[in-house]
Each structure stands twice: as structure tokens, then as C-alpha cells.
Amino acid sequence: PIQLLRVPSPDTAARLAEPSGSGVTAPSAMGAASSSPTPPSSADADAAASAAAIRRRASARIQEERRRSEDMERRVWGLLADKEDLEAEKRRLLQGGASAAVAAAALGAGALALLQRRHASAMAALRIAATEAQQRHTSELERVRRFGAEPLARSLVPVCDNLQALCGSLEGSEVPAALLEGAVLTRESMQAALERHGVERHDPPAGARFDPSLHEAMFTAPLSDGAAPGTVSSVFRPGYTLHGSHILRAAQVGVFVGEAQQQPPPDADAEGEGEAAAAAAAAAGAGG
Image 1 (spheres, rainbow, N blue to C red):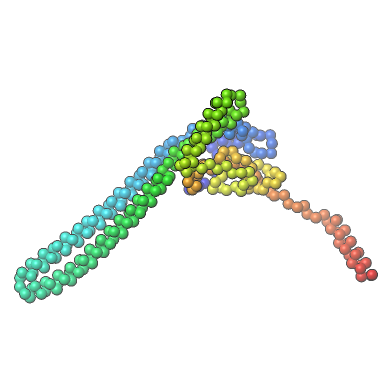
Image 2: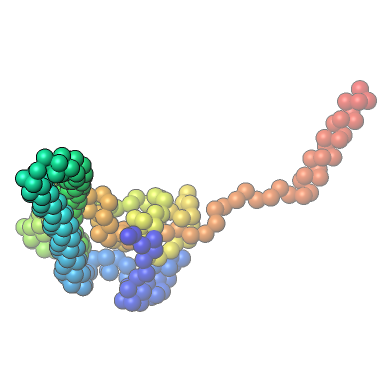
């Protein structure tokens, strides 16, 4: 599930608490923070735990379906054994005489018809259970195929941040052009590889409406000219999604807060003068 508003980590909260000297409550070293490499987190442990949970759920479902199939198969074989017993009893009674043969035939026909109906019902239930199990297995395999790499993709998001920070730091320094070109090429190759597997990067533009399902508010900023409250002021870190539905990381943004500017109320003196002028004009018109 997507968290509507994430709480920053203690390190991030400490950086955000530093005064910036302006009206924005963002940290003064936001630019340095965005250009510094992202430290490794517990993404690898989360990835391993998520993969293990997926394997356990798939194994449990397979065992449950196998148990149901075996139980249905035992019921079918039991019905078939009852059918053979009834036919054997019928043959034994037929050998006893004509009157016994007539009674056994009548009794055996009714029992055989009942057994056949039960057998047909059991086979239909078995086919339905097999079809449902196949559909569930197909759906589970498709989900694992599409989202099985989610832990790996989530762990690569900080790598993309580090590559972006590296390129930003090299562009503002005197380094050989080949080094900068290699860093940019590595960043673009990583981004292209992630996009081939359904990972998309999201950079909300300034002025976009804040969406708690896609954005994470990291700081607030006062309203500026032309800005509306509850909109994005700037992007701290971009967001990433997997196949458009799974949030790998929400975009970390700043949000404009405050009240929209309203028109000032009309002046009472000016309003009174306007009413007096209108009354004088009406009186002049009546006198004329």
C-alpha cells in the first residue's frame, strides 16, 4: 500500500531543521545534500525478505491445491470401488434364481444410477477445481514475472541518485571531458536498463498539484507570485515507479503553503461617496 505522507528519516529531519536564512523552511544545504551520494540503506534486507515472502506464499498455494486434488481423487476412486462392489453383489444375487434376479436387477439399477450421478458430480467438481487452480497459478506466475524484480529495482534507486549527484558535481568542476562523458554515459545506461524492465522516473514540474500517493513532502515554502497553495515548489529527489502501479520511491518535493491572495475589501468612504453621487444624479434627472 502507498503511504499518503511519509515521515523523513532522523538524518533528513536534522538536515531540514537547519536555518536557511530565507523564507523557505528547506535546509540551506539542500543543494549540497542533493549532490552528495546517497548512503546505503536496508534495501537489500527488505529485498530478501520480500522475495522470501513471495516464495512462501507461492509454495503454500501449490501445496493447498495439491491437497485438494488428492482429496478429490480419493473420493472418485472410492465411488468407483463402491460401483464395483454393487455390480459384484448384483451378479451374486442373479446366480441365486429368477425371483432374486428380478429383485437384484431392480435394486441394482437404482443403486447404479445413483452411483453414476454421484460420479458425474464428483468429476465435474474435480474439473472445476483443476481449472480454478490453473487460473490462480497463471495469475501468480504473471504477478511474480512482472513484480518479482521489485526488490532489486528498489535497491537500485539510490544508485541512480549517486550517479546523478556524481554528474552534477563533475559538471561544475574542472575535470577531464572524458571523465564527465563517462559518468553521464553510465547514468544514461542505468536509466535505460531500468526503463526496459518497467522502471520509470518521475520529476513533477513546479506548480503541479501535490499528490500524496506519488509525492512526499520534504519541506514547505511560502507562496510566491503566481503560485497556488498545495502545489509543488521544487523537487528534492525524483520518484520511481514499477510498471506504473508500484511505487518504488515517491518523489520528494517541496510544497507551497499559505492562503491565496484575496481582493481587498472596498473602502467605506469611497462607497459612501459613490452612493451620494448616484442619489444626486437621480434627483437632477427628476427635476429636469
